[in-house]
Amino acid sequence: MVDAKGSKDAKGVKGANSAKGGSSKVLFWIVLLLGAGISAGAFFLYQGSEKARTALQDSLREYQEMQQLKKIVARAKASGARTPSPKDTTEDILPFLGKKGAAAGIPQSLFNVARNNPQKQGGWTETSYTVTLRATKEAPIPRSAVADFLIAVETERPSIKSKNLSLTFAPSSPDLSAVSVTFSQFQKGD
Image 1 (cartoon, rainbow, N blue to C red):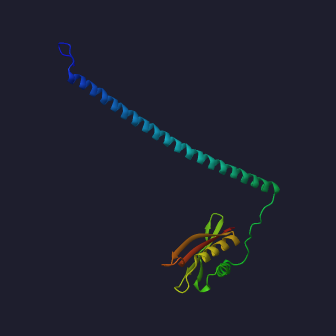
Image 2: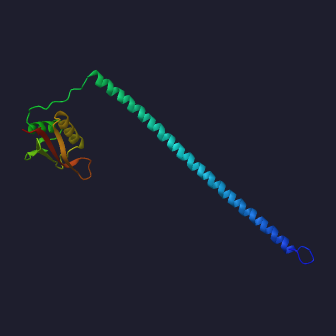
């Protein structure tokens, strides 16, 4: 500060210097925060670009695999080679289900098949069968046996499809205590 005589006051000089030093500290912190923000933004963008690059490479690989599969399918169609489809036999379905259950390792004492009333839908007749398996403590039903049974029925008789499946697991065991499966067979009606 300058007084009336033109001399400088020591307090005024000190106040001016402290204000100047304070503003440089604030400016330093602002620049530091801006630099940290820019660095964080650059790091975020770099990570995003890495994820995008990885996703692009995965998509490209999947696209190339799809193109190879298209070529294989086109060659198979051009050659006219077809795999034979399994034919339904004229064997009654009730003994067929019993045989497939026995082949899958399901004891006949646990196996029960009931025929449901046929239903007509449009030009089709749906005949359904309910297979019930009840295990005992001595003879639980293995999950693999049920899976083998379902796969065998549907692959050997394409007109039969499993419609409802209910599984009850045995306590403290990976095996099943009860299974209920409804199979439907669709036939063209008259």
